[in-house]
Amino acid sequence: MEIGCELGGLEGLEGFPFRVLVSAGGAGRGRAVAERAERTVGWLDRQVGMPETPPLFVLGADDWEKAATISLYGMPHVDSDRIVVGQEPAPFWSAVTGVITPLVDAEGLRLLQKVYGDPPQLGSFADLLVSHELSHLAHGRSWPKGPVGFWMKELAANLGLHGYVTELEPAESARLETILEVTWSSVPNSHWPVRDLLRMEDSLAGDGSNYVWFEFGLQLLARRLWQTAGATALQTVITALRGPELDLGQAVELLEHLDPAVAQAIRDWPQFPPEIMQS
Image (cartoon, rainbow, N blue to C red):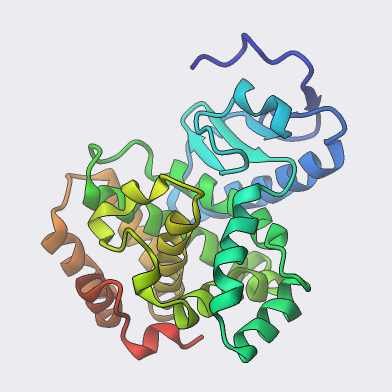
């Protein structure tokens, strides 16, 4: 879809090194997202180098189809010519909490309420995800579409997100990590209809909660990689994605050099070794 034909009613925000377009009444929200995006781009450029940043769209539900390439409202996504995020909390986050909260124990529910409110609302978590989307730009189009490349690209983006929060916004760490830990420690793996990592793309069907479970797991692996290898982990995965395509065995071997526990987690997915869950 070409940008530029159906952008009537969107408001441009000045003061950023990339174009920012928001829905009417969304300037405050759009500026907050754009400020985080600008910090993320600067940080990523220092770590792995970045291409030119495409326009950022912060859109309400009525404007979503003007720039979004994914129909599910509020699902953040990026392409070489756009970054698209929602102006309001996406309904699928309520679907996620609706699945998780009845299944967690009392301590897990207490943690969710402490960080995300009562009832838990994941808007503060979702606000961080623009850094994930920008991290996709660092690896570019990279490998041909395929099951290994799909999860490797998501792992790279999650490394960028975790590294950014750790280094530039550490006060947001609890908002980033609590939902991951509670979900993966409390919700039985058998609950999810799609569980095979090589079928991650298939989990996009439905309300989005199954796909989010995959992302949460990969985010836990990204946290572990950052703890053990720091920016080297991000640089290694991004460099691999910019080069020749790896098969599953080669991708696991790459991760083995960074952290054997992460490599084992990929082999045994969705059974994680205990050290992955330790923050």
